Image 1: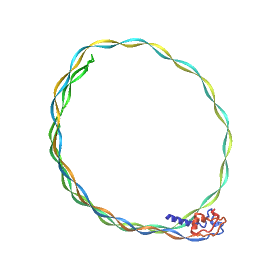
Image 2: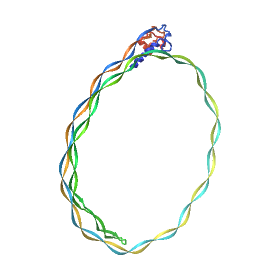
Image 3: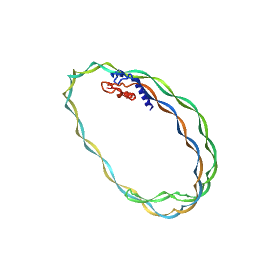
Image 4: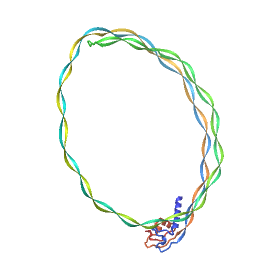
Length: 498
């Protein structure tokens, strides 16, 4: 808004200063127009915006600290001991004996005569025919065509653009700057310092010692005994007769026999013992303790503050305004024109003519040839032979033995154990906290106010005449003319609007 008023005031002052010698929009001064009358200067009143600082009363919100109290509930865990009974089943081992029958294969040996056939190798000589590829060379003749290059001169016509320069006079317009000095009055806000006493509130912390009790749970050791079942099983090595089958190498018959082998057997065993053990019970105690609480008290203090304020002051300054006046000048310019011109040149052209030639080359062929060679061949004849061999047969035999085995017999037992449960007990406590309460305060604040101040300006009056072209003057068409018409009207027309 401020920029708008300053721009409007500057436009009015420029219009007033340039009305005496301003042009009508086509570069000719208005004083020397063919209107047949001279302009009359008239004094007009213009309102220029001026800013002043005024103290204004404003309501603002400030916050004051206030202490309040509230009650909240805290839950404590109180231990409670209960005794419970549990029934469980224990497997007690019991040894038993039983008779088991088993079969053993007993080996029996026999002597037998056996015939067998052997392949005896022998060598024979034999003639074999085979084919060999023998290389044979042969000469051949081939005719081929070659392109032989030769040079020939040819005349060629081409077109060239030849430049031609001409001198030409050209008119151009130059804006010549003209400077003018003007005086302006403006308002400046000059700062000054002032000391003011201010009261403020401070929260001063202090420490207060508070006593209370708390519940402490301790674990106390208790010596007890419990029954434990111990596994007393062990490994034993036993000799076992196992039936087996073999094949006679002479007759290739299946022979049953018995062989003795060792195996490891697990012998189970269980034993019940009373073992001492330590358990821990929870004991609750109320223990007093002291802790520190930090609280705050409100305290008012006073301090001196330096406040910076501004007072309006009017000043005057002189500035220079530069205007541009159009001026016509003439200059000589060289103009380039291109003329087409035909020219002739001799060029060398390379051409090719075909020519036949002959060449000789060697070709290698492979011819098959049959040859004979003597080869040794290995052959086999059958021969029958005799041998004696011992055959072992296994004869089954039944035996009896007593075996101990363990059976787990289930047995029910009862034990008593202690369980600790916790009950939640509510307890009310009081707490003090600080709250910021809003308070409305009235203050005086400096505010800038814009006022319109009357100022007298000298401008040309209406000329009251018309031109021969019958159109309106510059005051009705141009932007500056519109401002002129706005302040003091326009009553004449000139042909300069074209």
